[in-house]
Length: 322
Ligand SMILES: [Zn+2]
Image (tube, rainbow, N blue to C red):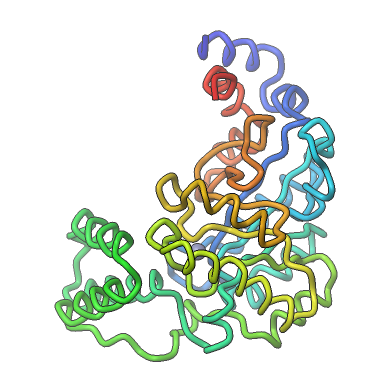
């Protein structure tokens, strides 16, 4: 079946045909950090890749914010055609300093998810601290080994209650002989309220909540979860004087949030929830756990395959059974 679909699409004109067949199915793209031309940081998206991808989106799709995508719509039949919403998780300063001029150049709107208590306290995200420790430890040793172990430690830390997770991270840093600075180094720095107000004033960048402290939501008690969901919304709305209608689950893979939290989002007044598992916004997508297309690296053909919907058509039987 897959083979047959792929053969037919390619025979009939490939990407363009896929775009037109799937034009009523919105896509949500996920980006994190960005790097300028002279920076070396494999985890950050280069400015050249960003430019190529935004150019592609601008030429073939209708870029919208999450709020514009969902609006007051009750059913997926009402989605705007060819809609692509770009989301940026965590709210690092590199969005403002590196990426924003490119978003403006191509007139592409975006939704940025920020971590309210960390912005308030000028703190940084624990997962970034973890990456920082790993990077420093590797610099010291000058090798690239231990990738699997590092991933295992990260997964373990993710599954701990908050206070134990922080202790675990401190222990991990000690073991690696790395000191975690109180303030983030530039590439991990988050935008402050003043910078975020500047973004809001542009009118093309929406701000959503990425919780108060960036916990793995499934590790929280119900009342902690309610706090992360409701308090972050209230604080961002108060500090930035703008409505916050979308919530993005930290990490956001299956198992990182619970079913009851979808209801908590709705009760707190959010219009939608954004997850990180792969997928398209089909009629089967849950409004409070919408799937996304992750950053695919510097391969524009691969990007086109995902964003044009070829991947959707290949996986379609799976979606229909969802
Ligand atoms: Zn995040």
